[in-house]
Image (cartoon, rainbow, N blue to C red):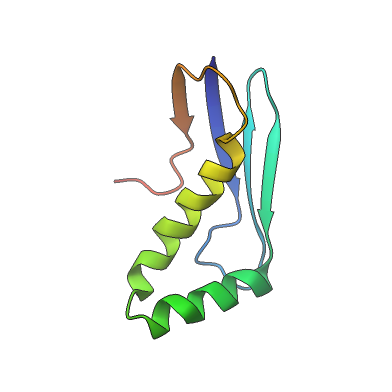
Length: 83
């Protein structure tokens, strides 16, 4: 199954929630609040990993969205972060 992932609200925008959704055959939405992102960001900064915050939180949201989707053959991630 081809699965497409889209993001609403960038992870680094800690003043608003972030939503990661998948579609095509299955529909799953994972949401993280602004408050939760702020708390997680503080933990990353305290650990000297401030730059890793965005990528690791985004990756975690994608994993949570995909964990119950069977037989993924293709995965397309919206180009929110080119490069």
